[in-house]
Image 1 (cartoon, rainbow, N blue to C red):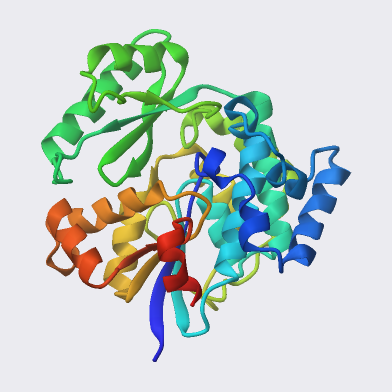
Image 2: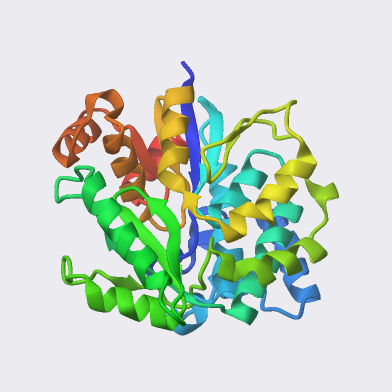
Length: 344
């Protein structure tokens, strides 16, 4: 019997110390795929992906860089997407932030090699320019309850800070029960000083992250469009759900518009991962939501996005956990205990 699945590709911040060796551990059979990625890195004068993954030591300062993290995450996630059990039918693909580039390749709108080129180019440009930064702050309650009033207050605070002279701050990603905000140092620091500390870790700055999905990234978008041509984009083989929740259908996709969105709106406007996930649920009602590796951090945002739309009657953390324990709905391939559900 076929199991239907929405495939979800993660973004930056998911290849950490525990993930070192991910390609070697899980994908020793994909040497040919990785050889192509390594060749692109060599041609660009960059360290090979397999060498980065095979290193004996992990350092946050190195592995959080855009030109290091992005290709590692892409290689890990795409290899996972190619390792699903034969009884799984992927009915749609989406991703978070940089995960959109991976989703394009996983859905067939970019070849594996062209997807790598997009990710490596954009990750390198982001790192070279490193305009602004990002922080994360929660708005949902402890039981993952949606709190639209609190969310509106935080966004109003951000807008007020953004209106100040010399301050830049805006919504970057709507991520389940979290807001990812991006801006310049003055904007980020003003927000940090205006909100209470939550769970002893928020507001949390993200190392080596630029002000993704804001107008500050306009120079990166412009350079990306110069280097990456629209001709590499093709019709997706399965539906793709973007950072607005819009669906790009096989056989009905304007590939020029897809290129335009990917290297335009997607870079400089907020990314609504929650809406993408909720639209995936509403439109495709899959048996499983499968998050590719590396890492497991995106699972929480997927779960909270489902709870916030009351999916399958789940209205809080407890209800979601009960459903997971009975019959898993969410599978994180980066979690050893869950991986087998997706790979067979």
